Image 1 (spheres, rainbow, N blue to C red):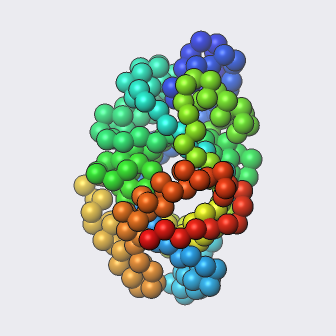
Image 2 (image 1 turned 120 degrees about the vertical axis):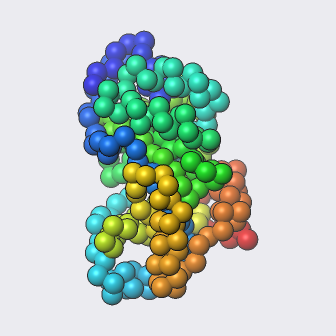
Amino acid sequence: MILMRGFVIFGVSLTLSYTLPTVAINKMSNQYEIEIKSLLGGKERADNLVSKIHERGGSVVSKNKQLNHYFTISDVAKFKKHLLPRINESRKEFFEKILDEGNDFSIRTRDTDGKVKLVVKASIGQDSSFNGVSRMEFEEGVDMTLDDLDKLLLDSGLEYQAKWSREREEYKINDINVCIDKNAGYGYLAEFEKVVSDKSLADSVKQNLLTLMSEFGVEELPQARLERMFAYYNNNWRDYYGTEKIFNIE
């Protein structure tokens, strides 16, 4: 898809022409991400979780380094109006569904070992789109650097919320993904995730994830504490981004 001068993508006024490759986002109309986080803290607990994953027949899928830049947006209606004409026809229905059914939105840019994406997430429950358990997610690969993509967003009136850096190992156990992240600020954090196409499955999937976590000896990070940690990092991210420093917020 070619974006020409004057059009808008993800709330961003484009002043140059860019080619966005078509990315497989789940060609079905819906995609719901059920994700539960567990704070591991130190490397010993992370290594112990990896051992238990292997004991259950899980295998590593990927290892990478990521930079994630979070942005705030104030006008979702404008975002939708400007974006829809430029979305690939096969994905318009799903993107509209995110904006119509979501009650909170998060826009991010991401660099994973040099591959850059725009990411839009929305909550489908009362949780936040940043850290909630049940979310819809849309991603678009872009052929530009992270700095260039950030500049497009900033030039369009969006503002940085925070910048995050992490090293990620992703494992697969049947149809469940387990990511173990070494995050600046947080230390080691595990994410248990399953993606479904039916929103009504969210509660039962969450229970299945919690059962697996219990069997692995890890517990859900309470949303209230996670929100406090998130808020603290957002206010102090410049002290942690790109470092191995961690903090503890109860």
